[in-house]
Amino acid sequence: MSAMVVTNSPGGDVNPTESPSVETPVATVPAPTRGDDDDSFAFGPNVEFRRPLNGDYDFVTEVTLSGEMELDQYNSAGLLIGGGVVELKSGSFADTIARQPFIGEVGVFGRHYFTPSHVFLRPYVTADINWFLM
Figure 1 (tube, rainbow, N blue to C red):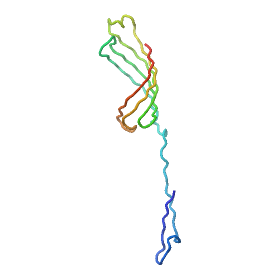
Figure 2 (spheres, one colour; figure 1 turned 180 degrees about the horizontal axis):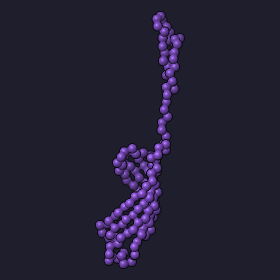
Figure 3 (tube, helix red, strand yellow; figure 1 turned 120 degrees about the vertical axis):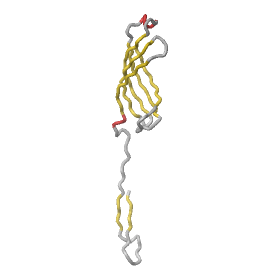
Figure 4 (cartoon, rainbow, N blue to C red; figure 1 turned 180 degrees about the vertical axis):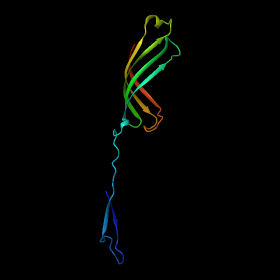
């Protein structure tokens, strides 16, 4: 792509098509391509503490490691693996049949963010498929 700048010599009747010209090139900058940045994949731990309002469980503590890949500006997908402990309520039915229960988890997830990837606070909805072992 180039731009043409036509200059006329001073004085007289000059035909612009016969006048000397200077051709000035216009620089083009290529658009960034997806995946050039380091933010397209994230890996990290997550620690959860859950306290149910009813049932045989007193609390659940779980640690998961997840890897999340950004699919586009609003969507991502990932894998997770984790494990934790379940504290049962003393005297409950589950407490009488189980001793120091442990949970394990392996799964995949998808997330849809409501804000673009460059925003600091990013609320999202998620869907996941997990396999639990207790």
